[in-house]
Amino acid sequence: MPANPDRGRLSLGQRLVTMRTRALAGGFGLEISGIDLAAGGPALHAAIVELFNFHGVLVIRDQRLTPEAQLAFTRAFGEPETNQRLEYTIPGLPEVYVLSNRMEDGRKIGDVDAGQGWHTDASYLERPAMCTMLLALEVPDEGSDTLLADLCAAWNALPDDRKAVLDGMQVRHSWRSLMALKGIALDPDDDSIPDVLHPMVRRHPADGREALWISTGTTAGIEGMDTGEALALLEELAAYVTQERFVFRHKWRVGDLLIWDNRCTLHTGTRFDVARYQRLVHRTWVRGERPV
Ligand code: SIN
Image (cartoon, rainbow, N blue to C red; front, side, top):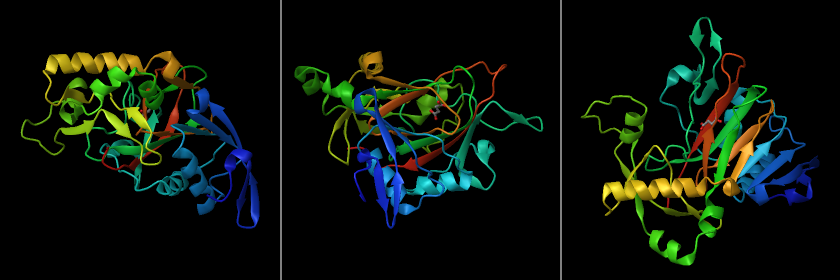
């Protein structure tokens, strides 16, 4: 890393950039201002990735990024994922997904309901999304806050005897269950995204910190446990990790770039008055590693 960005002045070659940082929710999140990601190059981007590895959430203020520039910045974190619903992506950029209630030429330009309900992105994949980035281009005056839960704090707050019971459990994540929940009927022979087992306690590759890595919507059971019992346990744990004491609420401003680490957080979108306000957000995802 080029310098300690928490000190506020980051040396990038010959230039000094003044980056201001402020801890959010006890250090779980970090607010960053004073930088321009579009003008900054690989050294600035690498410094942000380094901060990201040690904070579950980054809020970078006052960014103006074209979809191409957002994608270029996303690549600093790894390989961007493409989206399955191409109708809500930027033409020619299947990696940039539009969250919006806007209509253009009589057609919806984005997904208005994405992300409602606590979850970690794409946990139904063998290699779930590692990081998610949302850039706010238009925000409602009220509503649409994004909530993030700190799964490491939740794990750390458990008593040791509870930890001993949960550690080692394998949770079944299921695309099919998620689709059923959304009322989308899949062809019974479609096995394109098979169920996958992931550890309930996930270790972060940057520093080994542990997260109580459960989700909702995709979680369909626990290996070796009766399904009813497993679902009850998963429900209890989801209520536990999303208590207010573990949650950071992001209230949006135009130009905010919100980045979260899916390896140690859950998140949910919240609703807003779609008849009164418009929201336009560009989302990118980065492919992750197999959880351990
Ligand atoms: C998401 O979960 O992808 C979106 C969350 C939000 O719109 O706040």
